[in-house]
Image 1 (cartoon, one colour):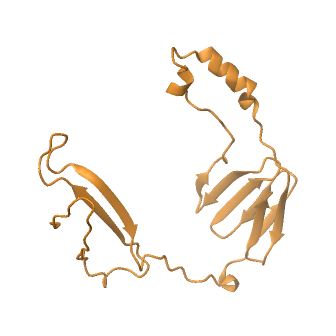
Image 2 (cartoon, one colour):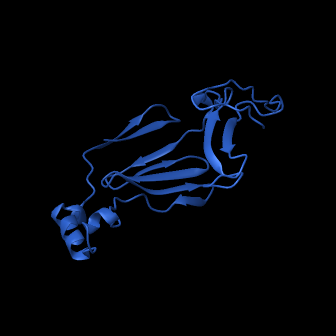
Image 3 (cartoon, helix red, strand yellow):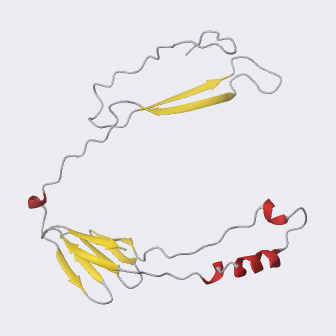
Length: 175
């Protein structure tokens, strides 16, 4: 779209023609992306060089999710032991380790979605700031890492509880 000339410090109002949305699905996301490019060659960039861009979610993009009728959901089977909490539905199984506060497995329609839950692992690659004005000294970085105790981090769960909300729904709360 061609833009009118706008001098520095000035502004103008534009009407942006948009396509007809009447055929789009209800709740479909609509995003307007604006890209601003040079229309002539300059000493620092050629014509067509992008100098700015912006993206906006347009009205009507809110996802419309119908409310869930709990009475229509299938009953869940629930098993709780010291080592695991297992929730089973007609097409899924979700297992949590309450001692370590992580997912053990999640299977949906006989397909494993998660075979082991996330673990706490910290590592940060050295950056130029670590060089300290000279050569990167890997041993000093490792020493700093150890002195801060970051090499010995451990998982800790202070509490874990399960609350039955209905025969169809339970709330797993990791405290």
